[in-house]
Amino acid sequence: TSQETGKIVFKITIDDRGQVMRVQLVESTVSAALVRVYQKEVERVSFKPLGSNSRPAPTSEGNITFIIKTN
Image (cartoon, rainbow, N blue to C red; front, side, top):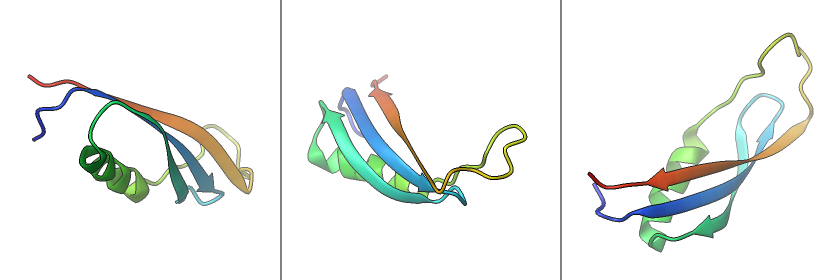
């Protein structure tokens, strides 16, 4: 519902069960309040391994980038 446009990049760490352990802000061009909204949603996400990897690493890291545009 925000009228902001911009970009948010988070670095995330997940455990071997796919649960988000840590969300760290890397870059943002929007307000801190909007960053918090997106961060809370990222913290609620869970992941699952793709393919035949039945034994994922104890932790995995990656980036999530949001490009925010208004209509």
